[in-house]
Figure 1 (cartoon, rainbow, N blue to C red):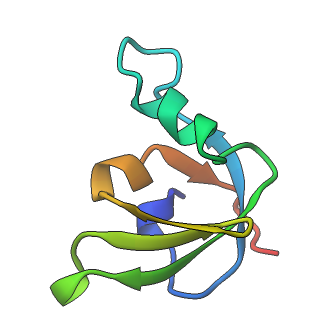
Figure 2 (cartoon, rainbow, N blue to C red):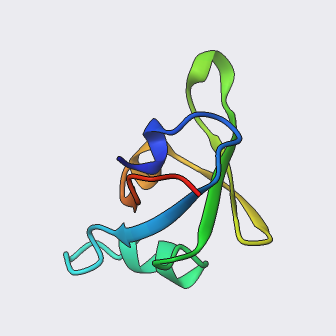
Length: 80
């Protein structure tokens, strides 16, 4: 399951960030801002009509992500 698929306000834990070994730097950028394995993450809000941006809390920080970015964040199967 990835971050774009979770329900609002449920706590989850980051399993991995895919794409960090590819030529794209997007995965590395997500890791740099705190999307690291074991970190607590929750989806706070979705944009208009369930679209973009996604408002996400990771640890104590809040970010707006696009769907493509959220799909790179793999979550553990069992929520906290």
